[in-house]
Length: 196
Image (cartoon, one colour):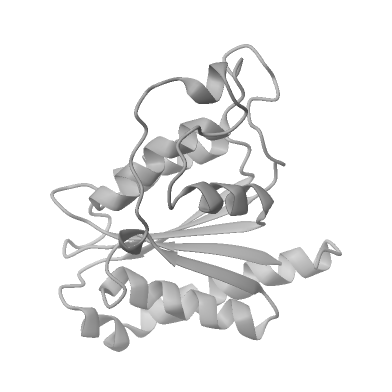
């Protein structure tokens, strides 16, 4: 099983710590993992040029996100993690989200095969927030709607609520256990389907 992991917040933050628990559990079960920290990539958000719909079958911007979008097309699981800032994701994750427009076919509004990559992928969305649950779950619902429209078959939320400092995650056995259990469920399901 292939996993592409994108850290939307700083690598030492709370959401990254939760992502690390998921990735460690998945790696123990044989997953192949590729990770990127969005703030380390030099990339821009969508510039609304429509080049991916008129000139090319991919985003025409050539920057640090180009190869990441290619990796997502080939992966089985996409892991996105973010802290909640002013009621939304980080700016880096917002910019990434806008670039995923290039994953839609040029005639996506009328084409039943709306997306340019194989269907059946899984999204794991990790959100760390200071607010108690459910908090800003609407952020996840927006991403879920987008990625389901891209042909993802499953979307899962790990909501690390009431987390104020990165070290808080270590003391939240409920979050850690749920995160490891989700990794086990996804990897086991993938294995039972006879996939590598």
